[in-house]
Length: 191
Image 1: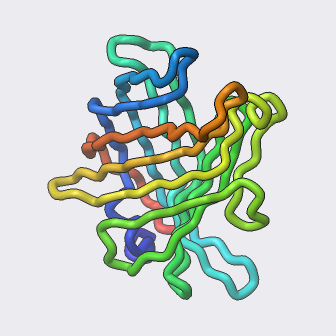
Image 2 (image 1 turned 120 degrees about the vertical axis):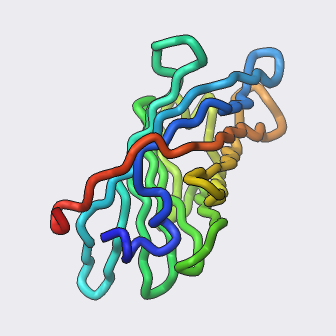
């Protein structure tokens, strides 16, 4: 239930962000795109792994460029809260053949928290298909969330890429402010 979601509780719901900014690699350096995002976070029933207890939100975010209908980015996963150790775990899967599991500690009432993952980590790592691993190798991921006033939250995301034809790593950055446009339903056991 929402009361057990710790710092994730304010994020449950349907959100829209219209001020998204994406700085990504391009042939001649860096390209900047604006984007519009719809982010749906729904509570799930508690999960157990033996003595480990997790509460969470299943999410789907869909991103388009302003005025367009074609998908610019699509992503699914879970935000999980483990109260016993005050740990947030974030999973991400995209239809380009990549997934990751990131984590970070936070207090139950935190309004800012961070999760991170590193390529090669056996627990909080990044896995890509062979093409992405060769051409745009993701070596690190960092996501900072800030719960704002008045039914808003924002994020700043940095994905460190090793692009095949570049000597230096590239910092791919995304950021957006999301405003609540709807409520999520209760988790199945609470319905």
